[in-house]
Structure formats: structure tokens, C-alpha cells
Image 1 (cartoon, protein in one colour):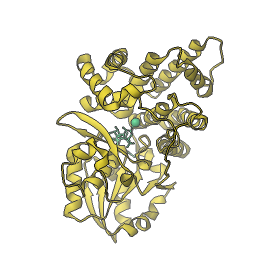
Image 2 (spheres, rainbow, N blue to C red; image 1 turned 30 degrees about the vertical axis):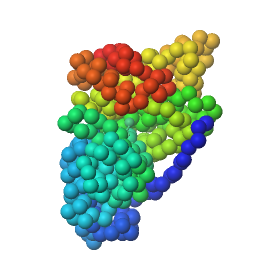
Image 3 (cartoon, rainbow, N blue to C red; image 1 turned 90 degrees about the vertical axis):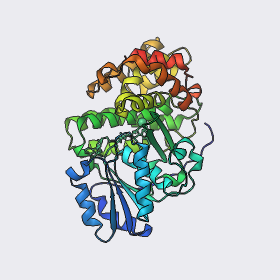
Length: 386
Ligand code: NZQ
Ligand code: ZN
């Protein structure tokens, strides 16, 4: 296991009606609250009104219209609001996009230069407004980590950043808030959780046994509850288990002590940068092809572990048989969530494969992935998804 720092910094208030604690949570930071949200789902499902009622004694400044795959322009808009209104705390109500945007807004408020600097160089993030979140979508884990992913639509660059000062102070996670998610977002979020775990599960660090066992448990949780959430959107157990899986998949519990770059996320970020694809859909499409691409004598044992422990496949002396069955099971699982499994189906042709591949290798450090990937590898993986 590699050395690591683990800091479970975010207070989680989990369960039905936990939002009642919001006034108490916000009070220590001050009265002026930036209320950040997306395109309006929180108005339709009543969360917005609940917050307005609860925060009557606070001064709320609306920061609406944060788009999925949040844009740099939204960060700039939010930072201006914070400065103009002397905001004390940001309340981010939504999924990963709203929370990510709020994190960079929190830092950009105190930064003199262009906000994009903070995305390109996270070491420039030294001070940020406090952030409190109300989670409405299980997937990214942004509610309990310091990461934020922002898209510069001028350069079509989507990149992650983050610092300890941008990690949410408190996240309120009421599983009933996830019940209004469209089927596509429930599936995409589940695929995202799954992929976060796989990104750290498939690492060559020896002796990270405890991380792997926790990871296998989270993967099995998603396999059990994602189909149930699709079938019964109001099933509390399904929503609760997916919500907590979302946080645990990417709060450091699975990934700490396992260095090296991720493999599939950097490629997906290029798809969503160029085509505004839903993040989890891109991951589901890419994952089986990436797995097939990296399966070899060196990696087969890890795939066998994955097949036996996660998918409960029958052991066999033919390791490659088990490994391929595990990959097929992964693909079948995503398909069962009604996720389109080719790039063609989501309107992506081959014209930008080279361009996206080059950027994924550079920005994602794919030379340091579990199995190092170069431009040719990425283009092959993309072609296999076409
Ligand atoms: O715009 P609103 O009204 O909020 O609607 C959203 C949006 O259209 C809707 N939605 C969310 N909760 C809902 C709901 N609709 C009805 N009822 C609810 N309860 O769902 C749509 C997608 O929301 P979004 O926030 O974009 O989804 P997600 O949580 O998947 O976030 C995706 C972004 O996070 C980044 C992705 O790259 C992408 O930009 N990621 C962030 C990470 C992190 N911070 O650690 C890691 C991830 O790997 C990922 O890269
Ligand atoms: Zn992700």
C-alpha cells in the first residue's frame, strides 16, 4: 500500500428530512447565502421552496442555470455574484455539476486573475468560501470530495481541479430527493459510481486488500440497487444505498493508498468536452472496451478477482475465460440499465478520435494508468466503442 493522507472532512447529514438542520448548519458562516442550482429540477420537486421556507432569516441570492458539465462562464458568473453580494457561504443544491461549479466559484471569489487559472493549476486555490451541499443526484461523490470538473467551452477543454479548502463542510443527503431523477440520470449516476470504484480497483499497488474488499462491496451495492431504483424510483432503500455508495466510492476510502492515474475518466472527459455527453453514459460505453483492451497475462488475475468476488462467477482453470465473462457481465449490467452502449447511438462519430485521444493522454496522465495508455491505445478503445 502507498502512503496517503485521508481526511473525512465533510460532515454528512444523511436521511429523510435532514434538511431541517440547514439553518443550524449555515448559521456559523453568516447570513448571506449564494443559492446555487441547475436548470430548475429543484423548483419542480419542491426542494427550492423548502429551502426558501427554512431560510427565512437568511439573505438568499439566487445563482441558477448551472449546466450539466458546468461551464467556466458559470463559474465567472457565480464568483461575480459572491463578490457583489459579499456572500458568506455557498449552498449548492443539485448533482455533481452544481457542486463542482460552486467549488470553483468559492475559490474564484478570492482570486484576482481569470478563474480558468484555478482549473489549470489547483495549487493556486488557497482560499475559498465555505460550501454546504444538498445532494439531489447520486453519482459523482462531489458531495464528499474536493474535486471539481469544469468545461471551457471556448477551447473545448474539460478538466478537474480542487483543493482541501473547496471540500464541502456539510452535505445533506436525503434519499427521497433522488426519487425525481429521470431514469437516464439514475442509470448514468450508477455507472459513474461503478466507474469510480473500478478506477482505483484496477491499480497495480500490492497489498491494498482492505481497499479492494470495500470496493467489491460498493460494486455489489450498485449491482443490487441500481436496477431497483430504475424499477421503483420511490424505493427508499435503493436511493439510500446508491447515495451512500456515491460518497464512499470517491471520498478516498477506496482510492487512498493506490497511486497512479485513472484510465477511463480522462477519455470520457474528452467525450463530454466535445459532445456534451452525460458523464456516466460515456463511462458505461467506454468501460467494457477499455477492459478488453487491457486484458493480458499481467492483468488477468485482477479480472479473475473481479469476476469471482463481484460477479460470483464459477472458478475455472482458464483464467481468461473468467476474465472475459466478468467483462461481459459488466457490459450486460450497463445495458440492463438501458444505457446505449455505442458512441454511434449517442451521436458521436470517429472524426475527433485522434484529437480526443491526444488530449486524454496529456491531460489525464494516461502513461501512469494501471496499464499505461498512449494515443494509439485510446484511439483503439474509442474505435471499439464506435
Ligand atoms: O440542472 P438540474 O435542474 O439540476 O437537473 C439535473 C441535470 O439536468 C438533473 N437532476 C439532478 N438531480 C435531480 C435532477 N432531476 C430531477 N430530480 C433530481 N433530484 O440531472 C441532470 C444531471 O445533473 P448533473 O449534476 O450534471 O449530474 P452529475 O451529478 O452526474 O454531475 C456530472 C458532472 O460532475 C463531474 C462530471 O464530469 C460532470 O461534469 N464529475 C465530478 C466529479 C467530482 N467532483 O468528484 C467526479 C466525477 O467523475 C465527474 O467527473
Ligand atoms: Zn465520474
